[in-house]
Amino acid sequence: MIVEYIQYRLTADEMESFHIAYEKAGRFLSASDHCVEWEMAQGVEEPTRHTVRIVWDDQHGHEVGFRGSAEFGEFLALLSPFGERREEMLHFAVRCDGRGGLR
Image (cartoon, rainbow, N blue to C red):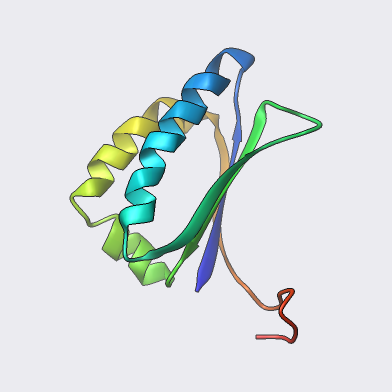
């Protein structure tokens, strides 16, 4: 498994439409065999900052499986208005978690 973190910095006027767009786009993530789980979180100290965390089966499943699916076009269309607000998008391998031990 890998974890993808996507950081956005929005304007105050964009936040509601971003939340709605991710709620709709999230249906495509939830339906994907490659997505284990996902969440979108809003900053407490800085409400215009948002982080999306997506757990994928593996990088190939994300980059080939999900991005190669017919649904990806619809997913991307919903989120493309916020593309310029994306500050970072990176994949991470989990090495230690709350269940104990290193991986």
